[in-house]
Amino acid sequence: MNGGTVESFFKEVIASIEKHFSDYQLEILFKTPKSLKANIHFGQNLFIAVRYNARNERIDFALIYKNQRVFGYDNLKEWHYHPFNNPSIHIPCKEPSIDRIISEIKEICSKIKKQRG
Picture 1: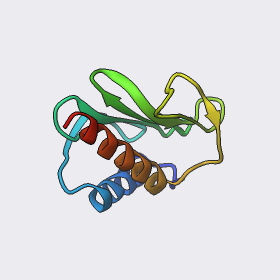
Picture 2: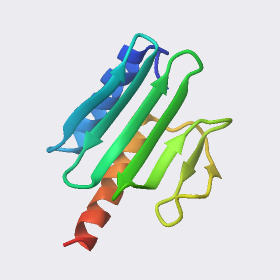
Picture 3: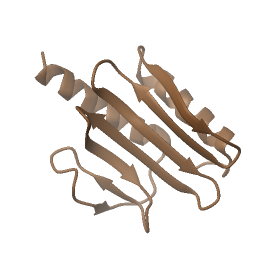
């Protein structure tokens, strides 16, 4: 997915966010040369929790709405995603690109924003 460094991962995430979203707020919770924890906010009660660990190449993207994961991708054990209609299940998949993940998240954010008016 990336070169295995926090910096390259972070740059790829931000480039994709800027491509797909015009309005967001970045919150870096924790960043070291080996790990990253950040939240990318899209207004009230809606954000992506992004986690990366360079030591074991663990990657986690979770779309959080009203303090609940509503969609996500991660590679715990193997790559899988948590679908929007049922985020508690794991559906195995091939390794997605960061841009594909962010693109899918944008589609779901649009659905959520339409639902809440």
